[in-house]
Amino acid sequence: MRRKLGIISTLLFLASLAAYITMLSGNDAYLFAGVVISLVGVVFAIFSEKGTYRKVGFIGNGLILIVTIMISLIVTTFFWNTP
Image 1 (cartoon, rainbow, N blue to C red):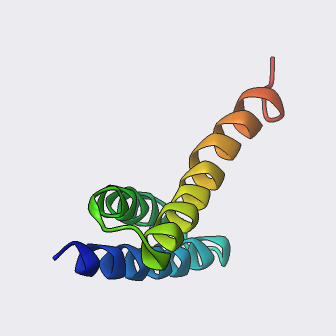
Image 2: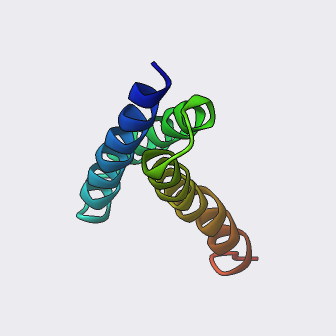
């Protein structure tokens, strides 16, 4: 069961990556879906067994969460700030 969680986490990474690429293409409705899918993928990676799928799940989903949440927060706070 734990191995399947790693595979599911990797598949969720690919799905969230597709949602993020779609969002970059101009459809902003997929941003929230990509973040939620990536968050679920990180949770599944936590409970999966050690191996390649766990690493891909952690690194991939973590990078998508960092890019979508942290980078967006920094840009909107410091660069798109108008008086």
